[in-house]
Amino acid sequence: MTEQARWTRARLGRCGPPLDLLTANFRRHTYAPHAHDEYTIGVCVGGSEVIDYRGGHIRTGPGTIVVLDPGEMHTGGPGNATDGYAYRALYAEPSLLTDGTLGGLPHFREPLLDDPELATALRLAHTELSACPDPLEAESRLPWLLTALARRHSTARSLSDEIPGAGAIALTVRDRLADELTAPPSLAGLAAELGLSRYQLLRAFRTTMGIPPYAWLAQYRVHRARGLLEAGLRPAEVAGLVGFADQAHLTRWFRRVLGVTPAAYRNSVQDAR
Image (cartoon, rainbow, N blue to C red):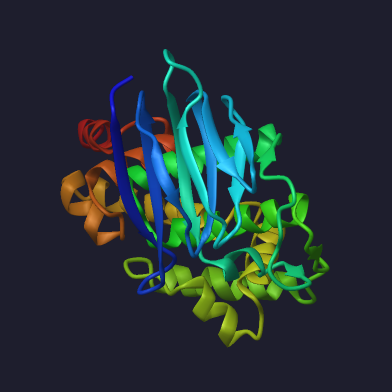
């Protein structure tokens, strides 16, 4: 394991606030005592780290989640002399954990959490957003996961999940996304227009459509891309025309939805003419 750390900045919606993602792989690095204004949420993916926190020691292992409250002093270093440690962390502004909860800022009495399902979801979202920090995808995935974290493991109480008129809300959001596919509006902005919190909008959309907004829009973009590829346009041209960040982003979603690359699809439909 080499000493390396990489920061990625994702935006929560177009022109929205930033959220930093850290990918860290260390053998010997030890952090000096420090604190963050945000919640620090990390998932250990290899080795073991020892964190000094609240007068005690936390020892991580692969698959564990660590949550450090804002303003809490802490350090971090290798858990032993041989294995090093690797983790994925995000730094969440406090309001991101209050959207679906009651009772003020969530407090995590236990900083070390055993929640394999949430750990897997956080790690996957971190990995995919670090590779392609799409604003709508970041805003669809991260606040949802952070709300789940607060509701499952903090002192906060959960808001009701009943959203009156959920079906109509979802269709309104769907139509806006389809109309503005190359520069989709922020979910926070749409929620404010509808008199909802972002969590309520996400809940309504996921309940009605079965998938989050970014996934619906990606599939709609793939549908639009098919027509352009059939017309003879190259994948690199098509990606920007339907709102994907680049050809790699188009290819990732095209394969997920149709099982082939855009180039292979274009060649097959051209050959069939």
